[in-house]
Image (cartoon, rainbow, N blue to C red; front, side, top):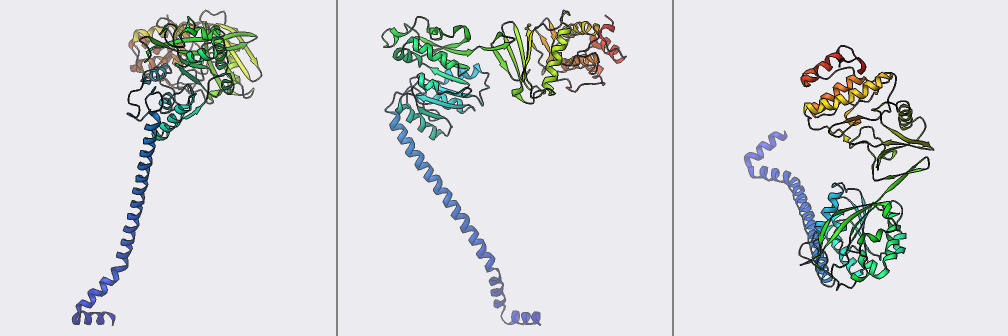
Length: 487
């Protein structure tokens, strides 16, 4: 009936049907209009926010220009070119020199810049991942520096703070990794005296391991008011700690004050490790035996240190049954038993006390073998010859190394030394000679050999230089002791 009625209406008044159809679509069209209006409102809101942001930015920029005009234009405004039309110091050159000294690996380090001026050093390194803080004695400079940070969006804490005994005393142990004092200390010497400056350097180095200093020199310009107060040797400020620090000069940098350049120094505290009441000075250290070490799980559980003529390995022992405890005590035991071997690492001292085990070795020339690029066959041959000689001595004692890997070999270009005897045993559970073949493969192809122990499969014979085929065939034939290899 409904279809018949609709057909009749369509014959008599077709325009009525069209009107009904149009009315049926009206709610959908209204919904779409509402959606469009809602989207337009959100767009208007976003535009308003952006306009407000730029208006606020422009206001702060105007304020910055006004404030900057009232202070010494010592540094550029970081990230805001043109705010300081002609800065007295470029500052980038010194920042790059400092960054290069740390090999570009500054991310995560904590830096304090004393005499931070307009904050350039703080913002430069914060932009590269450092956590930075600036101490500035001039409140006007600090205000400009803080506003620069608001505008460039780089996080750093800049505050008004004098550099003296009281402020140094507020620095907690481990609070900062590096303190920079760039062209600051001549003012300290002038106002506080050389002796007090020496005390400040001593106290600062008790709290922070590394200082970076740009130092004014006496005679730079005799007319400068501080010149007469400076020592003949600018490094006399370290007179109280001279034997306890390592000083490296990074370069000479010109200033706006004279035609004389100033030296930039890195001063590092020599760490000391005590083993059986004997102290060893440490010049460098790291938490990994080598970069990317697969053995490191907790970077705080192991430390590797270098000093004059010694290498020191220190393990934290979470418990007596831990991997650290097993490895370090096993190596001490193994080394004690093979000190008569000419190619064994020299054991100088060791101590297991509380939750720390420390071993002191005689330091030998060379660096850990780096894979990543193939080595010439002649060089691989020399390395393998040295390693096989060490294994002949060891196998002759009825012992096996069980960890022959490229990262356990020191190479100085002529001599290779096998290190890390933590898995040494009377059982050949890793297969020393099988590992030697994988070492050859790694050095030939520029890849890392497998880390797992107990490998039985040999590398592809065709991947090795023909000079190693005789060794390969002997190992493939079942020989497992270096003493049994044909010479």
